[in-house]
Image (cartoon, rainbow, N blue to C red; front, side):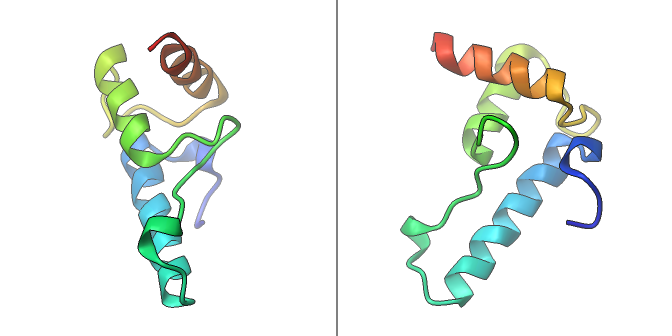
Length: 79
């Protein structure tokens, strides 16, 4: 990535995850076998956005900090 994930907004992390998946697919991996998992808890893009919505986080301004990741992981664990 162009900067640390913890300095990226949630939307930037989601886009980075999609770019990782595209790169994996370009290398011959089937799309359904690729992953956008990111961060300490390996949260995938769709789940990250679900958590952000549920927690009232703005994906355009909320950074993917360790605290944000912990909050999301806690929400995911409680679902």
